[in-house]
Image (spheres, rainbow, N blue to C red):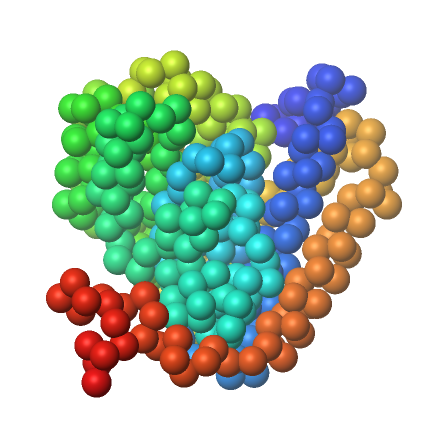
Length: 340
């Protein structure tokens, strides 16, 4: 029996249905956003890469919905879901993907570099594991300033085989920094099964070897992700130092939206499809007494919202050419004349 079935079946009315309905709404919003982002490639609205996280929505919602607005988040090249769940505006995000005016980064960053400082989202990152050391630096800054905020850093399983993983976790532990490291383990490092290139027992064991408390959960079970996240964040706020969360999940697409993923065993794909995190939460809520109409409403509202977002972003003007000179620094003199 899964955690979801246990809570829904045994606790029944004790399940906080309003709270988890909000998470279901967010998971559907993430999926709708990403499915439309994938569609944009066919319409040539995005000329770069899109890295979907379809199938991983429980990680984004279960973690980021527990964060305060002032808390800081760092993500990966597969970061649309994290950014939405942290509170970023979907229209501004879609405009960013399309390179349009009003994008979260002025249309300059695109899919892999979405950031929104207004909601504490310090940025997605196209360099695997680079966000880990950035997170340690951000957490150290919070500690030096005496602030009570925390940092959450989400990265993939491929990142644990890169140097910044050791550097960032070691630094965080040495200085007892308020950062939650989350390994969103979808089994693949780009097109290679991570197990074929990772020595030893994996992510959680490596974190524990550096002295970090590490919890491993089913990343497609949002109740498990939610509970583990709340425990870890409580420890951070209690001053117990950095924490580690290992979420086992699966991406239902290839590495990028145009990757046919022929390197994957289809039986494996289908077994994970049966563990779809949205369907599992929906079933748990149904067993807890939520009506079929309310569950369907979560889906239909999400797709209606994102269809409108898509159309509006597509019809948005391109940024003014003068904007190319903004946010650019040259030898300490970020002025237009520096480029004349």
